[in-house]
Length: 237
Image 1 (cartoon, rainbow, N blue to C red):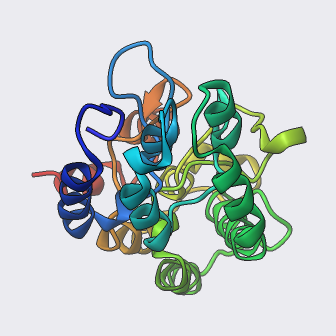
Image 2: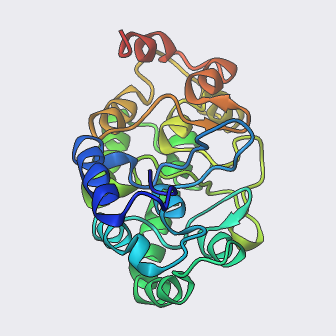
């Protein structure tokens, strides 16, 4: 609906608010809507190719009000770059919003990366106590609920491009990165390792069907030999 500009903004806005009222944690989730398409967040679908600002202004304002990131990227580039390439009427508007939100968005992504690195052990601040790690995740989810399903990485190169096999991953995948932790001396002892963290993410709307690096979250956990995988699968029943 967002990218079908034959649907007027008022009707699209009604559908959008109903969806986000039910699934608020999907505000920054990036996914394709058909095979072969790039991964995009809702804001990307709203602005790319927009012939006029009136065509989606209500939707864009609603998304930004609820915490949609302006500086967000996936394999095909940053959202603003994609808007520019599509000839979107929102380019100047988004450029101004990127500047307006820069401090908050930078702080939020830095907080996200601090959590992701601790979850998988790729940090100088190893967290072996599960209650401590669960508390870190809980506080992050409370402070940044719009980032629960955000997809990025703490291992990044220029322009925030991830390196390594996980690619653009959500926090819950890093919670299941058992092989990664074992390589850093933090091998799995029981199925309780990072289970509390995963439970917090699920409680705040974390999803297990997100794809990154060619696999879903659960498929990555299987590859990583995470001992909490049976527990996670049971949450889907």
